[in-house]
Image 1 (spheres, one colour):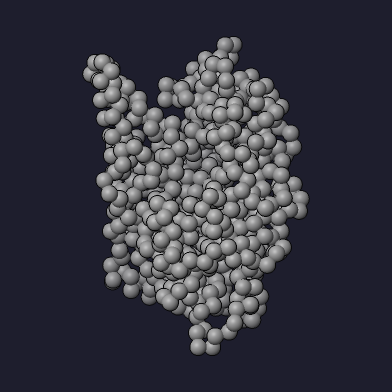
Image 2 (cartoon, rainbow, N blue to C red; image 1 turned 135 degrees about the vertical axis):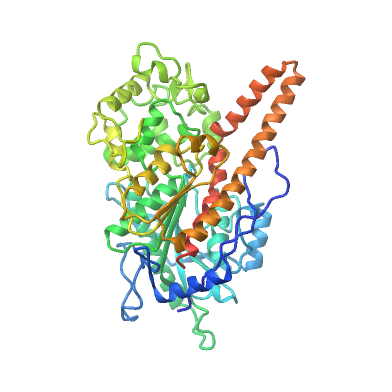
Length: 601
């Protein structure tokens, strides 16, 4: 088996920043490993030398060197294929690049594709949250081409997608540019299969042609469901290869998987990635390396922060998805949670066959308002409704999602049964509460991942001003917990250094690592480039917003002080009230994951 170590170039440099948008961000393509380090890494990989207590070839998915190759591969789950795999699209490397250009996505992919791709659509068995039999679909994408990187035994990247509101979401639909998954599937395919990996990308149960009537969301059981997708993907690869004509003159033409398994995903997919790593560890099949991005790992602390008034942009979509998933798993726990206006409709909206804008425009959900502003008769809510003007967008006087009496009850339960991360991190572990009087908070506790101790090396990635998945109680808190556990090899990358002066004064670092030096050194170089690229783009866009707002205010007759105040408010709103920050971090974390995995390929 050939082992190919390649460098990890960065995202492309855009032309001058477009002042009208915050997304996407791009970064200078400049990083390469030195030839000396490259050769040493190859030599290290070939010999499997121990470094800093960690084996460079650690976390093998199955050990093909120590087993008779005639033995069947380990069985990950009981999942089976319901239908034969169906090819939905085939791109040559040139055609894949052209598709990226046509979709205006080239700035999100670091390199021109080396490989073409063949997209296989699979339909397989799985189970719902009550153990009920159902099905799920997904994509198995194989590289092909003349480059040796595109042939023979290749690593598998198992990809977990982020929050999808639309029922039709299908990562295998690269033959349909109107599918809501098309852009994401194209970028991920070009980033991994286009560079030689095999990609298995499940559509979670409840999406596409799945018969499940709901979509599991931020629950540990999604890790097991991902294993069903992985097992089905491996069965599909075996079936595809068994049906290919044998070419004696080209033994590497058939693409199959080797013993390397990488896990990655962003947002909801970040949580699912960590849950999947946990599920694999529990069955003794530790992955090679894991890189979750911007996930809500500490579910309880995140919910406690939110209920305390630190509202998130997108919360009126995320929370109905979350509560409907927990109802499916635990039974009815929604009594009194939603206001009367939304109590019937909110838990049944997602995944939707309607357009998401129509849900808001037709009044089925409030756009951003989660809570009542300045409620009367609730002392515990008086100072946190909102806690600061930055969160005004999440509060309304007569149109809001959550019942005020329920919110007060939740905040009171927090005081009696406090969390170890919110409102104050209790070193070294930030423990999950041991009890609660609220069924919904118990569901949060059950699905909290902060106590997971990974066996594989991990890269956490996020941005500290994320308005949708709060950084401090999720990514940063998880890094502090792992930093105090000598059994964990990990790094944490905060791509946003625009506010690092203030954060450094508070003792907060944009990069934390316990990885072996040989792995950490090249990764840290990539991290620095990504931080500089993201932050320069963010600063340019926020400066443009400030300037445009200031000039407009002056044109309207406001004095200099009033115009500056309006401009600062617009600049702040561009971060805390915009999903584009959260989505803008995504391609940087994708590139960071790829650079991280390159150290283990």
